[in-house]
Length: 425
Ligand code: AMP
Ligand code: TRP
Image (cartoon, rainbow, N blue to C red; front, side, top):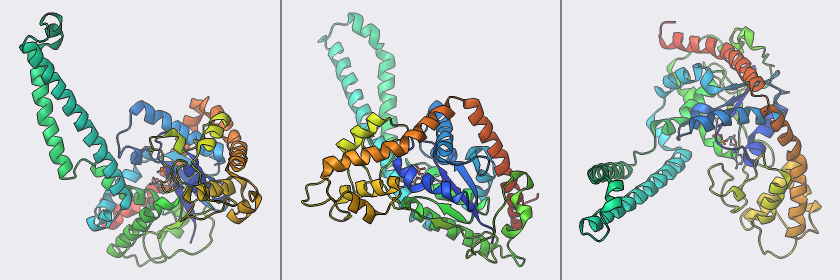
């Protein structure tokens, strides 16, 4: 079986240490062992609303981060998901092979839907309060408590009355939606199906991700299996044929380990959850994942943070009061464990080696040591990102080339999918 690595990150906000240590850092080594594709998944990003200008900027920043971290865009294919239509086309076909019950099990959907529910509840709360105050003000004007003159000019009484009533109805509708838990968008629900399409559109065999994506990858395997069972193939799987690499892609798939796919239309993609830091935690709370959506900037280190910011964030990171040396113990010392894990990952050593190195440190000394290691590791990446972002035209050129190479791989596979299910091609 010819191997192909595929992975992606959403272009939302700044990339952080979790994205780097959990995912991107591992890609760099893999690209030398396997044909590799690294995608900027903007279609996944819009499953929650994104400001268009900010999205455009984040796409370039993510591309710059990939390259600055060591992805070679000549060797690997680096591209933006929405520029290759096969992702959306295959996603629809896979939607039609995915039972709702499988999607209902996805924990990320539940978490994100809950976040968007809380956000909407807040908006309702504020809008109701505003409405109440406006009505109170109107009443004061009516009762002559507040002078009519200037104020009534500004208030434009009738219009305001209409706004208030419309808003009340809209808020009531929204509350009803929330009660029926229907505020989260359909795209958020079928997010993992699109992820399966990303992978299967290329018949990718290995998917390096952080721990949080494990469940989505199991689903991608289930969906591939469902498709394989629905359309059994008698001939050997087409992924092993070079004709499916797309001759313009410039990728060669080295032949290596077998996957459990033999015989099916789609290979079953294998998750690769690698390194010491498969789950980097928040610097403010060792039991919460480091995440782009955390309100506090001090909860995470960004790839673009300068030395001073990194030092400050690490100094302020939560620690603990346990006596004796700083030790890895996830259940009892989540914050210490997280800092040790980060230190080991950036120094390229094991946790045990890290514990030995810091055996005589108190938290203050360890934090200085950790900040220095992080700064040494991240400063060159940041400098390279700044350089790359200064030449947007060159970044766009790289992404366009990547998109053409990706389409060369995906289109023949999509054509074969269409033929298999009986669509005209
Ligand atoms: P996202 O930012 O959700 O697009 O995630 C992109 C990649 O980063 C995925 O492979 C995630 O598993 C990985 N990732 C995100 N947050 C973390 C974290 N806190 N620790 C480890 N990996 C992470
Ligand atoms: N869902 C992934 C995340 O949030 C990003 C992603 C989208 C992805 N498509 C993918 C990762 C395909 C690996 C393969 O982290």
